[in-house]
Image 1 (cartoon, rainbow, N blue to C red):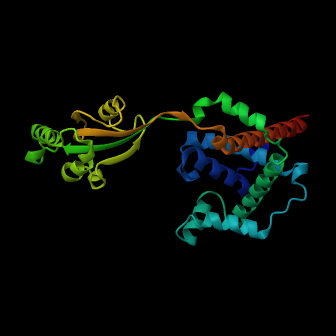
Image 2 (image 1 turned 45 degrees about the horizontal axis):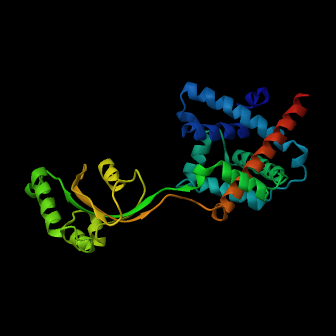
Image 3 (image 1 turned 120 degrees about the horizontal axis):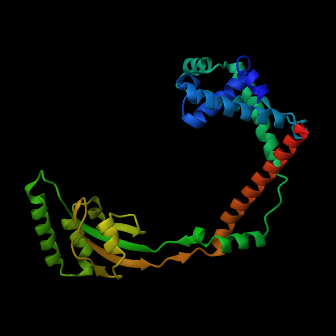
Length: 289
């Protein structure tokens, strides 16, 4: 950490680490930090700077070449975040940087990333047994919830309109229920004619719904219904509804054949991170020893 702290006044690279940590931790530039935040950012920057130094001085970094094209693309990506070049340069200056300093910091960052990728590439490959064990040990991650296909008719409550005062709205909804008479084959037609929800254009269709997606009163009623059933009148914050539960799709587990690619991705990334962590630990031990 001492090496990094000594760089705070003279190194644009360390200024870059300060800025990167300030944006990551507080979504602020350095000039916007209060003293306590600045202290936290300085400590974090010292750690990330020292780690970067350790990695780019490692044997794995030898002979790594960052092309001018890579560096220019990285520099351009930063500049493109600003509406003008003047604002870009002004912001760099406010954070203790200029374009050459930023370029130097980005070059080191690209070397760091390339080394870490090189190390990660040495991680052990995941096999079918690893995939199967993960699948069996994490049932909840591959569980698809029960879904219900539902339509509704809504009469809104709005005190600005006499016909939408609570009592009037409830009475209008009761008239719809009486006219519908439980005929599920006409529900979509009635929704188009009477519902005051935008879904009326699609016959009141809300689509496939899982628990917790609707208002609590609607959710509670829907998941007690049978397929093909129309609910009694239900009140919500919007007004009065009736629901039609068209279909019930039971909860089920995603088969391993469909989950395999995702599990491979999860486990391979875990292997890569563990490999990097182990390598960094060994580097630090060599430095300390």
